[in-house]
Length: 285
Ligand code: PAF
Image 1: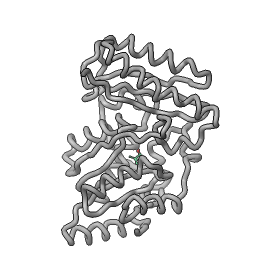
Image 2: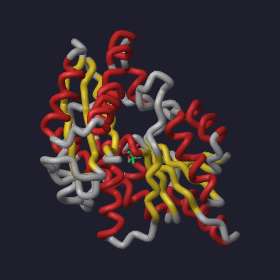
Image 3: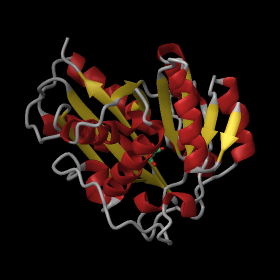
Image 4: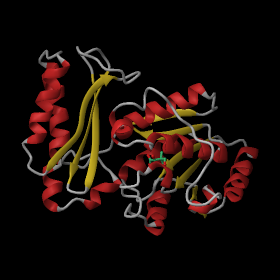
């Protein structure tokens, strides 16, 4: 596996692969890889002939009081995990390479409307503008046939699908299932920040999603009632501080009062300094 740091090198590599008739699968990431990223690489490997991973902690998608500086970074460790899961090349640019105007600055942004108004879009202003802008830059650099994203960031998938549709970007977005620890915690690079006590209490996230699934299976259809049951369970954990619990139409993330399917139950909860997200798509049997 190769590691390159410049746009010129990755473009040259992709050109050579295309000249051999290879399709390009792309897994954009911010590094500090876990089994979730590895499952995206494996999906890319299964569907495309060449697998490109980018590792770039994008300053544009972090708010001023967020964890950009303390976001975990370890390229050596990432390279081992990426190679193990089948990556052919890692593109790991510097901030200057991606944002040569300096300080993570660009004059052109990609703003996706409506699907960015709720959930993480509401609690992290500017976040999805940063994501859509960097991902469109990465798509223009790598020119992939397919790009693979985890469903843990369900809103990110909706935002990027909207961007690709509206701007006619010739790439297929492939959503992949959330990977979990054996005890249910959704894999995230931020899990390393949890203290043992927070880690224990964070299990309430997957438990509350299961509870909602169970309520729906038993016939619950009232959105308010389902949300209150989820909130109640999360609040039973003293270290859990709810950012949001929302149940929305899964296609356009618009509000719903009665369960229509498919519906997205999404939550964001802080444990100490660490903000975790999780979600499930609720379907009526
Ligand atoms: O999901 C992520 O890791 C990031 O938001 C992404 C898509 C790599 C853009 O920086």
